[in-house]
Figure 1 (spheres, helix red, strand yellow):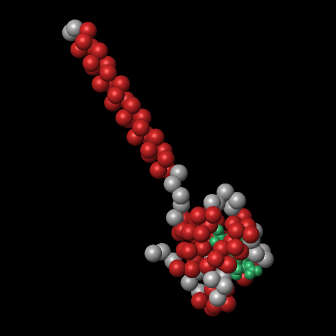
Figure 2: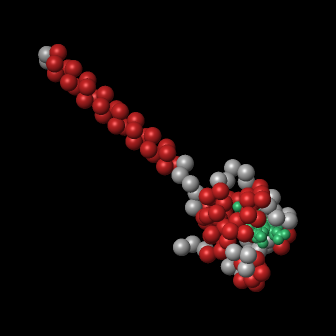
Figure 3: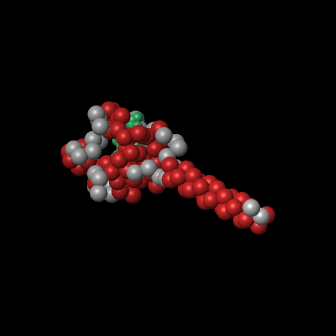
Length: 113
Ligand code: HEC
C-alpha cells in the first residue's frame, strides 16, 4: 500500500466519523423537542385536573367549563401563567415554556387533534 492510499482511507474514515457524530447530535436534539399537549397535561396538570381537586375544572366535563370557557382561551391562558386560586403559576411547573403551557391548555379544552 502506498502512502496516498493510506491517506485516502484515513480521510474517508474520519469523514464517516463526523457524519456519525452529526447523527448522534440530531438524535440528542430530537429528545429535547417541545412536549405535546397531552404529555404536558399528564406531567403537570392531570394530578389536579383529572380528579378535579380543589374545584379544578376537569377536561371533557362540560359543566366544569361552562362559565370559564366564556372568558376565551387568551384569558384562560393568563390564569395558567399567573395561577388562579389554588392553582400555582403554570400548575407549579416553572420549567414549562409558555408554548408548552398553551399546548396543555389546548389539550384540556379541545382534546387530542
Ligand atoms: C395544584 C393543582 C393544579 C395543577 C397542578 C394545575 N391546576 Fe389548573 N386549576 C387548579 C384549580 C384548583 C383551579 C380552579 C381555580 C379557581 O377558579 O379558583 C384551576 C383552574 C384552571 C383553569 C381555569 C382558569 C380560569 O380562569 O377559570 C385552567 C385553564 C387551568 N387550571 C389550566 C391548567 C393547566 C394548563 C395546568 C398544567 C400546566 C394546570 N392547570 C395545573 C388546580 C391546578
